[in-house]
Image 1 (cartoon, rainbow, N blue to C red):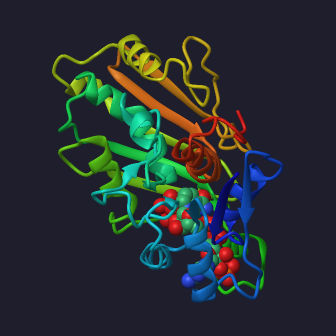
Image 2: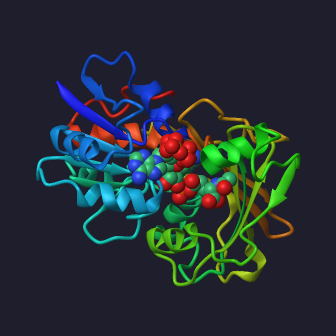
Amino acid sequence: MTRVFIDGAAGTTGLEIRERLAGRDDLSVIVLSDADRKDAAARRGALNEADAVILCLPDDAAREAVSLIENPDVRVIDASTAHRTTDGWAYGFAEIEPERRTELSGARRISNPGCYPTGFLALVRPLVRAGLIPGDWPFTVNATSGYSGGGKSMIAAFEDAGAPDATDTAFRIYALGLGHKHVAEMQVQGGLAHPPLFMPAVARTYRGMLVEVPLQLRAMANAPSAAALRDALAEAYAGSRLVSVHRGDDPSLLMLERTAGTDRLELFVFANEAAGQVRLVAALDNLGKGAGGAAVQNLNLAVGLDEYAGLRL
Ligand SMILES: NC(=O)C1=CN([C@@H]2O[C@H](COP(=O)(O)OP(=O)(O)OC[C@H]3O[C@@H](n4cnc5c(N)ncnc54)[C@H](OP(=O)(O)O)[C@@H]3O)[C@@H](O)[C@H]2O)C=CC1
Ligand SMILES: CC(=O)N[C@@H](CCC(=O)OP(=O)(O)O)C(=O)O
């Protein structure tokens, strides 16, 4: 029986993962008591006795957790930003490169993708790889997240009037210094020449995310048609049970909550061919394929279990 330790199990992502692992009979979960969950000695013990650990911690605590692991057989899935562009860590997005699922199978160090990069890379990476969009294109990314994307402190700010940074705002844009922590991840994992211009926002809804990449195709030499973009995305994700590409059944409105509560990732190509304009859009749950669902998928691959076990398809 595979033993899994969740470090940070009391946090937003940790709880999501526990829900997905509950009731599974192919693994058992080690959870530290409230008194022990931040105790370095207790964590060191659990980190070394498990077959696999999932880190649902702030970046510094995730780095510390990795440094506490001495057992060479332990598999690590890190949900934080700490190792997403680090050599020696497999980037845990099974669907994004043809050989990636094989790399993740049995991997000892896996970095779970960021929620926003999951949407961006799902849309852009196959198109760049296919040569339909040049890798030096000046990409822009608009995205909106539910407030659970900011973890316990942001949830408190939106739900608890007494929280230190309590807010009654409905919608806000942020990262206005243009230096969000996900930009490097999007550039490196996308194989892009330039950092994308990233414009995130947060809305007063608990979970759900829309990530949009607008394309002014009229400014691109040898621009592809919308049909070619759809075909390339459909081919890239053929056979995936989590990632789907809409073709000819586009909704007229896309809701932030569209995939909330699931681990699905839905992709759309909206176009006005005459104007030479396209809006690539990804809908996902920041806590699903954007965090907990992806972590469980990566765990399953790392320890050789059914890739989709425990996922919300
Ligand atoms: N929320 C989201 O949508 C996503 C989150 N992530 C990433 O997942 C990680 C966790 O995020 P999230 O769940 O949102 O954050 P939360 O703040 O909700 O949870 C973090 C948890 O880690 C605990 N913790 C903090 N420091 C330590 C430590 N030194 N030792 C042990 N436990 C510690 C916290 O304890 P306490 O309860 O006492 O505060 C808390 O329970 C982050 O790196 C985040 O970037 C990734 C993708 C999406
Ligand atoms: C709404 C909100 O604040 N979202 C977070 C991103 C979610 C997250 O925790 O980032 P990782 O995916 O890298 O772990 C942010 O912008 O920093």
